[in-house]
Length: 264
Ligand SMILES: C[S@@+](CC[C@H](N)C(=O)[O-])C[C@H]1O[C@@H](n2cnc3c(N)ncnc32)[C@H](O)[C@@H]1O
Image (cartoon, rainbow, N blue to C red; front, side, top):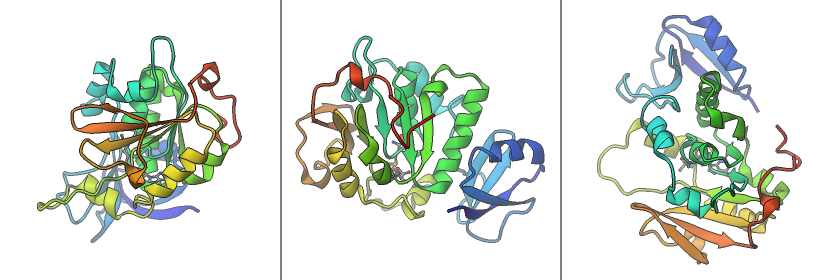
């Protein structure tokens, strides 16, 4: 289903916008030069696609960037992140990863950057569009890992039955009890359709799939997802990766044999 959203393009960069637009066919954006009176809207400038809200300062936006800023620094720095160890990366061994909660692509890009073939699955159409635009810019900049990164806009639960190898990764939304108003990204993640938490069903589908291993990211002190005790865990400073191995990772988990629904 194609959803329809407002977009603001104050400097009318119609051509670059139209080219980029082809990368997110699941959304129809009605572009205007004026900011709408209320609600969430897309914004286009020379940095690409952003998401903004009338309820927040117009300078704040949700934007994904792999070329500059925090995620770019994370990609440059990455070597032995707990995440890569959790999915089973070892010297010369990089399993295929099905990231069922791709979000803004932070974790998925780290995994592709170290050499895993990554299927980044995101069901929210707005978040998937932001990610698709960031991937477009990364591809234009010829970032080496982009060829290993495939974004799929779909509910991951519909795809997990076709997974018969590799690692399934889940980073479900964590509901924080906070007194202060959330920032725009938090509001978007919590309020938009498709981002809501039904992660227990996702875990069930992941464990039922043919993946060799399921990995779930949790806040360091949180209980395991659905109360389902992991076999082991890998801890970082503030997060923990719960590991549910189903069999040993082997050569068969290294590349995607082009299973149905996941073709390039
Ligand atoms: C906490 S965020 C993930 C952040 C991500 N790991 C990153 O590094 O940017 C969770 C994301 O999962 C998505 N999501 C939740 N359930 C999903 C499902 N069943 N299929 C696909 N995406 C899902 C939400 O829309 C949200 O964008």
